[in-house]
Length: 387
Ligand SMILES: *Cc1c(COP(=O)(O)O)cnc(C)c1O
Image (cartoon, rainbow, N blue to C red):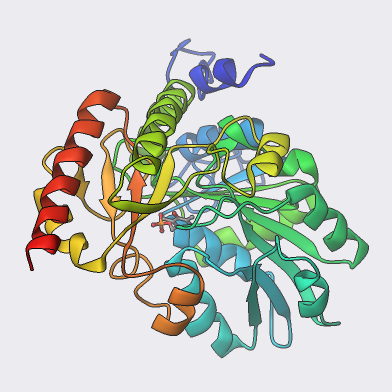
């Protein structure tokens, strides 16, 4: 049971000794009979605990190497729950090209509760030291970031956080535990939008959180049960079903992404490619130290912003749609979609230009993906030159 492929394939398996069922049952009951006064089967009411959700929660805890897992109705519900650890006067330092929805939560909801958030590039020398105040309680890190694929040195940030009595929270959505395990490097909390690679099929909304220590698990469990944005039993089952093939999918996502990144990098109508597997990527060495791969996300700038509309219109196989991590390839225009809530000036300073496209490379044949990109780029390039 040492290898992650084995843990994934066996997720939720054989938990019911009375039947020997290989896959986890879907328990829809909201309530559970007590054997007698003062006794419980371990299940009383489904918000507090549900056997199907628990199989999933035990599974993600095992995969991430943590104490306890928690499943939520979405990635944002998971992040919202975790942020209840903070209150008025507290300060958090976060990655500066954070997922747009997380930024919106921090700026438009958490701020009203008196929690202040600063944003920075963790890779920038001295930036973290400068942003730290006596009120700083936590680092909130995405690595690679979304959409410009910046890499943050997790071990260095965790060491700094520990020295200053702060906790480290890592959004591991892009890498998944198949490629990166922040808790084993000493992070306190790891979380996921399981709607992406973990679910993997563009058919499920879910969030997962894992705590490294029992003390942190107890605090998070209180908030999960009290707030109640838990994942239902059918979705918990569907997520486990998807996760069983995570290893195979991640390998294929990455092989395709490597190939597509090289193709785009060599294309005359593409100005710049962001992919940590390219030799030109400044974070490549750190990525190789802390993760076992580069993932399946590739962002790129086309040479002229007027190319974007005709390019997206011309794609035939690759869908122009938000989200990522599914078997079907998707292309997103961050400036108008995922990152529209970030003010334009901040966006362009971060490199989220009006020419930047984010490609969630699926598991289709890479030749078909390359051909689709090639024909759409060619048409878009011609239209721009004709004007
Ligand atoms: C999608 C996403 C989220 C939000 O998750 P939902 O499941 O859509 O609520 C958070 N972080 C990252 C990195 C994401 O990609």
